[in-house]
Length: 145
Image (cartoon, rainbow, N blue to C red; front, side, top):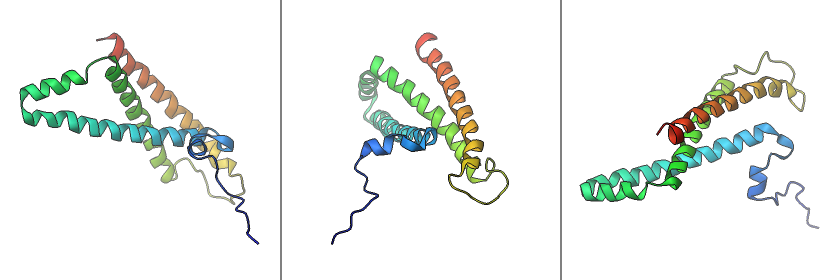
């Protein structure tokens, strides 16, 4: 008789993105991962565009004219947001790994609310700082120019 796997994940990518019972921390994880992938995509596009400089001034001008426009302006703004959030959240994760937000050790009882209560306020501070940096960056991207 075949035994069914009670941990079968049928949600696919939606299961990876949805917070479900995990809450805010799961969304922070997903956003951190998506920002990292966005930064990687920007990095590859940046190498491609700046690599056109090898072929001379005409090629450089052609590559730069192809990345002008509102779509790429919004894309640059999203990359700015990705750098702000990914960097600040990365600092939070490093400090958490060093045990800064864990508190004194004691018996671990599920659902481990003690570490969540210490880490969630720091996550909210990171999100507020990323929002402030994004607003300041948006001002520079769209209004100041």
